[in-house]
Length: 470
Image 1 (cartoon, one colour):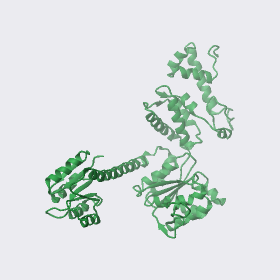
Image 2: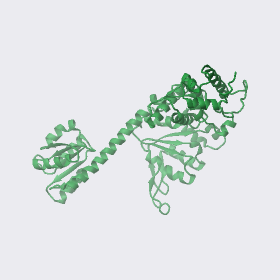
Image 3: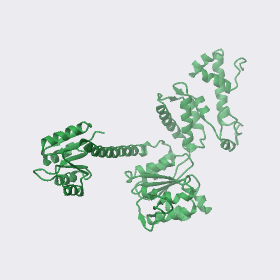
Image 4: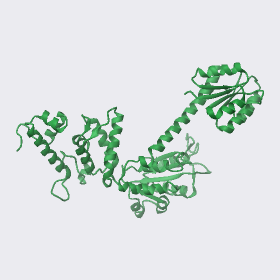
């Protein structure tokens, strides 16, 4: 990465030599014969670093460095000097110089130092860019969905982000609780701080304390010192996912952290103060868990300052078309395809699904539908073939896709929605086949689908094209 570098030296030959060396590495070099000139042009150049001579007629390089640091407190400054007096080096480093080089300059040594600074600048720039992307990605208006149920979530979230209080997010698995947690962080005053996620159910109980609070060196044989997730989240947010699965002993320790705002590493005799916002999430009925003595009541009240319940997708029907369009674009882009349309019948079919797996399940269906779709549009067959219901869900009465054995409905006319969709599709296909004298290629052309899709539908719906039905 090329960076902007100001150089200052009263010797024009040295100045030219440094400029030529740095230009070979594709850096933008701005040479100056005096410190006053460099300071005057500093704001226009906005340099990433400076290379400054130690001895100059108008004053020392250390004095100039102090003036430069008044403009940019973290500007890396390399001091050059013809003197080999170690005291000069000590003075420069103590005053805040990044490094000290003696003349004549060795190119490899100069390159090594400048490259290291440039790498650090590139890393900071990448972090800044990623932060900006995250801030944009998780703005409220970028969270997909405009249903009334989701608007209620945003109403609470908008109030919560203005405070430092804890947030408890509840909802079924796959409803987007983590997305809401990230939106809370990136729309708050802590957006510039870290967002640290801990999946409480995925970490063994024996390791959870060290993971959360850290551990001191040699607490056990061969154990290295490391900070916990709470320390890593200092100045930002910690997201405790699936907190309902947290063991009782850890609930007590977490309660103390919330009360005292400090953590104790395993093996440490000192507590460490932290400034962390806690957002917790669970897919269990936590109020029931409290009533059943499976979750501490006092911890529940500490967490439940702002309660956000994310509704299941079945209660957010109006959001499904928006989510479908988003996922279609996502997976078309990932696979290098033109963005496909979704046929109206396919969209209607998707909106009517019960989605027991919520947004996660919908995304999986769309990912597969994008892959199996032959044409420029995703049709009802593409999505129906991609929709699979686990046996446990089917036995519980969740609708299965057309063409598969479906559980009998609890009430109604004896047919579930998939049976009715299949019958409707069968009638349309039979009528089209009859109009086209049972020629599948002509039928496919009329219906705007591929011959392969016609063949598949004929087989799936049990239509005998040799002995057409009346």
